[in-house]
Image 1 (cartoon, rainbow, N blue to C red):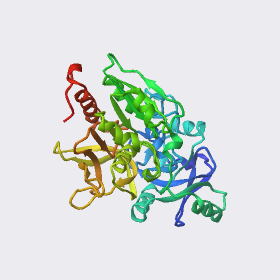
Image 2: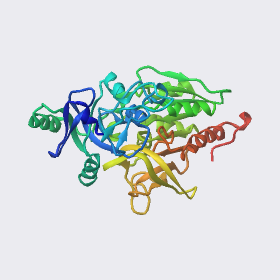
Image 3: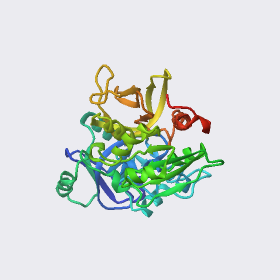
Image 4: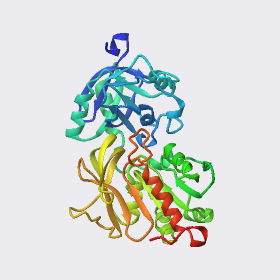
Length: 384
């Protein structure tokens, strides 16, 4: 039975090209503006909602039934929902899981997240795939459509937006290593998900999470074993911070590892360009070819921009970088490493929250690089 049968107030989703989808209110009522994107994950809706990389976006889930296992504090990737709005075909009225601490709709209401249900998410997804991601709004059914359209068209486009610095922590904090501390890692927070520092901590790393505003001098003073550049929202071309650290630390033998936005910032720091994808990569089923491993990984992704490459696989403006991973859907760059410095990055989310877990080996690679960077007297060797 459709959820609209339970006396929900009407709502509609309007896109900037005028396409309208009528449905019913989900979660908090009101108006929500942002870029409309679709996510193909079948599970993990709470991790998706709380991923800071979704700041400024209205997220449509392609899987038709969402909310069936509820929500719980352990699955949050940040302090609360970051997505500007949530779009589903049908929301489950029952949360059936021993881990559940509440229902999805109550969670959305509690955090003031505007949502809509009972719309044709397949038609919406097909429209975005053919026309590209675009600005849109979730609005109450009583609101004037022309007024909503004007609000949409005056809303900032994602290109040129520095959203990452706005979601970064304002104060640094530390996650202690599990067991014996082997390394000290500094993590630039551009919208870091909780699982990334947890996975590093599980490998013996004490992780100090830094605000995006921290400069090179403070980083060098901390004398880290490695630097992690996190995921985050917005246009990488608008984020100027971290470039100096990305360029300086590897020259001193300190490994740098970046994911998602961090991957793009590393690429740009070494001279590469980034560009806006037509509708981005969002979901947990994206196949990526790992060139050196000669394997295909199924990856979790959430990004709207990519690093520009040539047909021969080279990276314009960045001859020091080589491609290590390719997206098998559209041939875009999914991973890079420097040819002579201890720097590597991937476009996707190896912390896999939600999964799959095919790419978690990358955190182990980072630890191996930090071990190799230590002097032989400390049990390591020089960086290759």
